[in-house]
Length: 268
Image 1 (tube, rainbow, N blue to C red):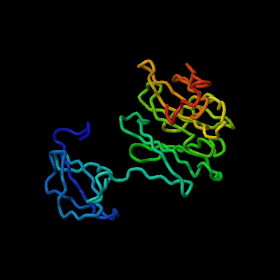
Image 2 (spheres, rainbow, N blue to C red; image 1 turned 45 degrees about the horizontal axis):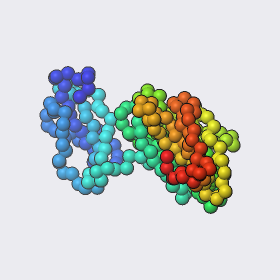
Image 3 (spheres, rainbow, N blue to C red; image 1 turned 90 degrees about the vertical axis):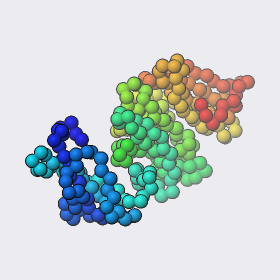
Image 4 (cartoon, one colour; image 1 turned 120 degrees about the vertical axis):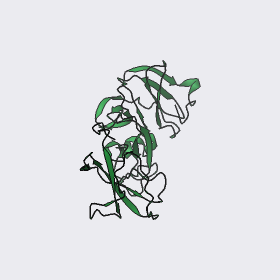
């Protein structure tokens, strides 16, 4: 029911069998429904697509405007595919992170497309990208994040997260972002990918072992109230761990040098 419906509002239900809407549908009920729940059990065949719409009926029996068509395939999986994307690199991988970027209280999905940016591989010529999807599966934005040479050839060195940093009820996207030749911590508008704030990422201290060129990122509540962004630069030696508030002001830094060098892990 809608707020505009009255106690006298009734409902007719129409169905089309198949993929095409070649007619107005077949009415499934003899008399308009009083209730707002209906289960179609008439001659249902597995793997067949059925399309439905609801039409209001007033107390004189006159039909109002119909709803949009909604469809389902009988016997399909309980959790069907709701998001489809077209990668720009044939053999690329992806990583999803979920959050409420639209502010509707429902989960959206942001995926990282590596587009073939892998360690020990040639530059595919396409940067790592982030693509955001509505909870209905609609693509909202796609944004270039970093190029092969700037992230040591691996999307694993291009961390991102989805979190409400400013308390407005919508999650932002926090990510490593290449601007020119510099790596930045960036906060993006979740729906559009628009850059809200950025600051330079900590510069890598050393890489004697050729295995410490990693960066990590997380979100934490250090005071139990406000979210902060935690970054880790380097893993196997001379790690630099920093915290940033919602405005990307650096609030603290710990350098794991000298005796503690090499104590960092693949996490923060």
